[in-house]
Length: 342
Image (cartoon, rainbow, N blue to C red; front, side, top):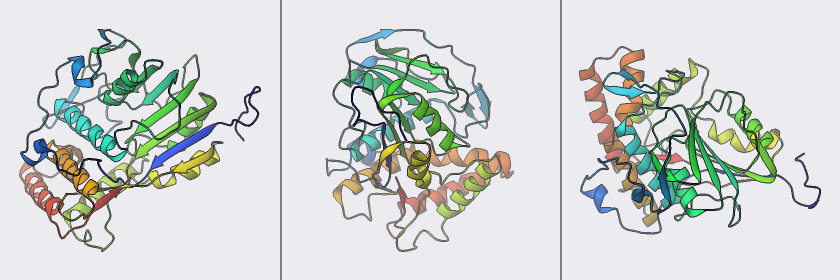
């Protein structure tokens, strides 16, 4: 049972789990920058890219040295714990993915009914920090804290936003409770996601919300993904994660785990992200599929596969490049109706 506020006996700790299949954007058209292959290349620290005027320069975290491997850079704090890189190419991809989530949620940053004036907000595994920055701009009443293994967020951020180097799997040492905790695309981050949910429950105010937005392994309703390079990638990544005690398919368990640690009124919303815009009939799904391909062009396949196939399986760069070219063709193939449950 969740703790009841003494002044509002009917109000309980709630949790909203957005763990699902994405439905894509309110705009039916495919973004021109996706069609033309124009990607985000300039990651300046200008706060205007986050459409807010209340930005100041702060130094609330230390910049950690990055580790280099196969031409990509990775976090040095607890080096090797997270599989994806933290260089500009990856940060650009995360910003593209942020737009995919916005399209999916009809330009909202959350589904939890948090009200117009949230106070203390935590974003775990914040990545590029774009969600935390946008949330801080949209909700000036909130103090937003973003935590991550990498200090790669912009220096110029809203006054009500801060970033800290931290591992959410360590003991949480926050001195005040939060009324909203958010996590996104954390499927490959934690060995024990249920323990993260337990820590969130213990660090929320009564009536507060936890919201997780995450992806599961790609699938297809007609079986067209079977025997493609896409299943080869997923099997090897899944096996590599399993070798260090992690899983890629945890999202489907989130609702049950949240209920088991004490959350009430758990709501699960499901969408899907198609692998391309060519096979879906729904205009929103077409848009999301186009943005998904933009992620691929921004190095998603290469970043996922380099460590697994070269470092762990010993593939040569030439063999990997040939495989990735085939994988990109499979992703663009309108006959392969693959999608990620979200």
